[in-house]
Amino acid sequence: MIFNRDEIKEILKYLGAEIFVDRREHMETNTICHNKSGGSLKLHFFDDSGYFHCYTDCGKNLSIYDVIIQNRKLYNENYNFHKAIQLIEKILNKSIKSERKEHVTFDIPAVKKIIKPQILKEHNKSILDCFEKDEIFEWQMEGINKESIEKFQISFYRPDNQIIIPHYDIDNRLIGIRVRNLDVDAHAKYCPLIIGDKKFNHPLRLNLYGLNFNKEDISKTGTVFVFEAEKSVMKMGSFFNFNNSVATCNNQLGEWQLNLLLKIPNLREIVLCFDRDYENNDYKKQNKLFEKYEKEARKAGKFVKTSFIWDSQNLLENKDAPIDKGAETFKKLYSKRIDFS
Image 1 (cartoon, rainbow, N blue to C red):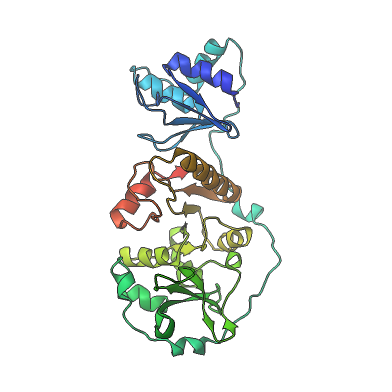
Image 2 (spheres, rainbow, N blue to C red):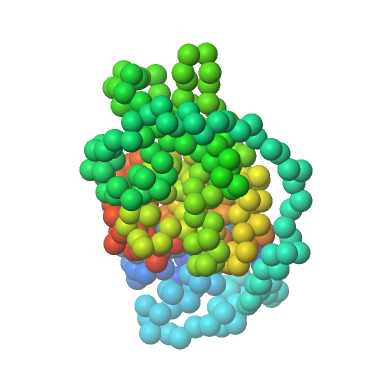
């Protein structure tokens, strides 16, 4: 059952909340989920979903029942779901009907979407022979090893001071080439390769970078990590002895891209690993981004178990990808991922 904001306030007041800040789409209150009193206003209630999110110690989504159970633990009271319902009925002085689902299963074959196939234009791979197979020191300084650079066929175009990033479809067809401009005055960091009057662009939303190379590891592990940038995929392969990651080249997983993943045998979980695109004190942007990532996770969660990484521990800096601070930080972030199963 989803409670309205006034009812939520009544319940939270009983649990010890003292301050309520009403926003248009959510409400902020004290972190009574892990503090008896004096907690910061980092426990947020979202009207559309009826869920809370604690942005500090808990670092996860919570139902009102979870909030009650965690709050009563602070007082050494052992609550379960049904006891939480009884307490709510006492506070609100009304009977409520439980709609909680204890177990959710995903029948992937039954829900896979049928999308009309789109065959993208193929480029001649011989174009890649025109570029220098040189050391990419800028990326190696970030932790991308030589093996990953070779695997993903990264090269260098000296005339325009650009790192060359070939994009293949799942069948190993060269469908586009992106570049990373190293000149500080370049019009964009990333853009399609242009040589003369020929542009090597492709619709990014119709492909997943790295899927052709990593589909076997994804199938073996049953999990796929979905990043924004190509570099993140290369870092995964550099930091671990397997690579079950792909990149969307933006911070959303499109319908076509999701369909590509659902075709992989044995897929059990999608983990969205989008960039941390906010400063610590920019709570408005944090909330907006959290809601966006939650929406993306729920969209994919209709078809397969889906979670997303959220930096509730402030381990990253603004603009960082979850993999940018190395393997150990990524493991910590992964262990605190927000699960929509």
